[in-house]
Amino acid sequence: MTTELLSPPTPRQTQVFVPELVYFEPDALEYPKGKRIHEWALREGLPIRMTSSHNRITNLPGESDLEKYRIAKRTLVVGIRKTLKFDTSKPSAEYAIPVATGCMAHCHYCYLQTTLGAKPYVRVYVNTDEILAQAQTYINERAPEITRFEAACTSDPVGLEHISGSLKEYIEFMGKQPLGRLRFVTKFHHVEPLLDAQHNGHTRFRFSVNADYVIKNFEPATSSFQERITAAGKVAKAGYPLGFIIAPIIWHEGWEDGYAALLHKLKEALPPEATSNLTFELIQHRFTKTAKTIIEQRYPKSKLEMDEAKRKYKWGRWGQGKYVYPDEQANALREFITERIFESFPEATIDYFT
Ligand code: SF4
Image 1: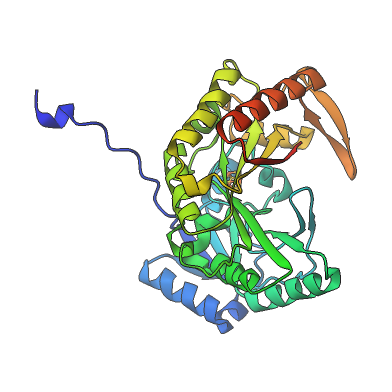
Image 2: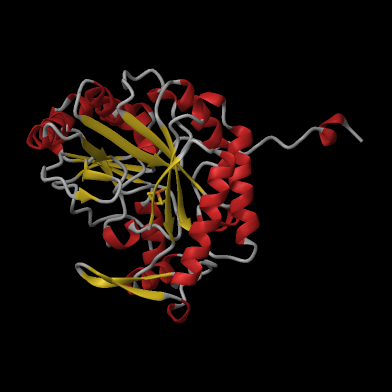
């Protein structure tokens, strides 16, 4: 037997996202960020096309709907954010701050599939100065209250940072704001460009984590658990307030072992500086009828359980309601995971379970 056969397998390394196709709005090239991304795309040798609007990409390649969808997920569109009215973002923040829209990962349960509808391509915005000026207006309006902005409502911006550099700008902007705070969540480990940002403790850097079963079955094209946790350690060492979002919490065979193992692994892997001022956010799996139809089309082999008969219907404020777990199951999940969190991290805060 050779030594090669005896050595442990090299862990899988998730590469940074490189799109297969890049579109630019012509006006985006007037902005320094647009120019920089254009030069990058040329250096990478990527096919470049122009589009009149980042909201109307109609000529994407692909034979079938599924192929078009897969290509769209690997298509970058560089444009100007025209809507500068921010959405609200309860319960984690007051406002959703736009940084990007769309994501290259393929999480089966992701709500972007429904909210982005026929536009699953990845959009980044070049007019970040205007977006931050709008954030400043919102901060001023709410003074002397603190205003929190969530940057990951419509994308996973950490996975796009090597292309846009926008998150670092937002982090440093909020670092200078006595009353402004930023937060975002990621499933990617590409945190290097953000480690030296002047955050001043005003950005909460959260990682999305889950039981092995969920990551393995439902989160293709994201960084592995190990990569995320190593990145979380680096982020904590860089002095950022750290958090974890356990979402979606999924009831599956062996869920107690799965979630207990998750908390155990987090405790083992995190450096001491990561455990003070740690927050957890807990979100149980939910789906709408529309989401179910889309997921079944796009991921027909998915094991994601979406049986309405096993769920409780929760009326939505804007019409379509969601299917969540019945109270008994939801309570069991909440209680069990809460106990495991406090066993491993007695000083942590649980912001919410929803
Ligand atoms: Fe959606 Fe986040 Fe997965 Fe991207 S990483 S597909 S935004 S759940």
